[in-house]
Image (cartoon, rainbow over the protein chains, first blue to last red):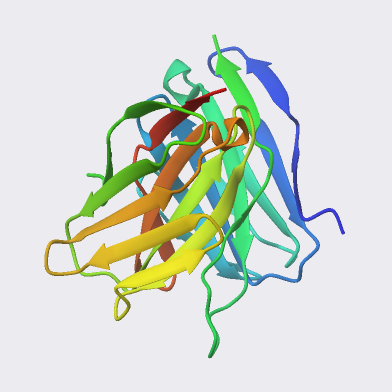
Length: 116
Length: 110
């Protein structure tokens, strides 16, 4: 049981390049999230998904796209990277709300992205 | 704008002392959670307190919630060097979203 994994761990992009970050979870969680973490800002929600085939915008969605084609995977895409997207990106997942809802999110180890 | 704001931003204490961190928020919540992040790692869930609860314990952790003041506190008793980490409060205003504060950086000196 690997929990939440993220690929890659590190990446350096030039301005204008594109890339996809992959998040995978093996806990059969319905909800998945993408956050970015910048110094002094805490975590900010980029996009999230409440189930396979559904996505929604978070606080800071501009410049990012996501897809949830399979329940276990949540992809974050940068079509044209900008230096302002230099950050650490975290994926998280959790179970769907139920009678004993905990709302506990399980986080991946993060992807450190630098855009030059 | 951030829903949760932790205070202080940084805290340094001696091993064995208690550490208290506070979190203030702006709107009504369903529940409030505390997470820990060790340097370079992902966040780990510590404890959740629901809006109808006032206090909750888990091991050396004690969380309080005052919905009238829109604030919460996290107390870590008898701190250890291994407690050195950043601590974040997260408010849940709907069951789809969680909003994190900027965090408190705790250093426990052996």
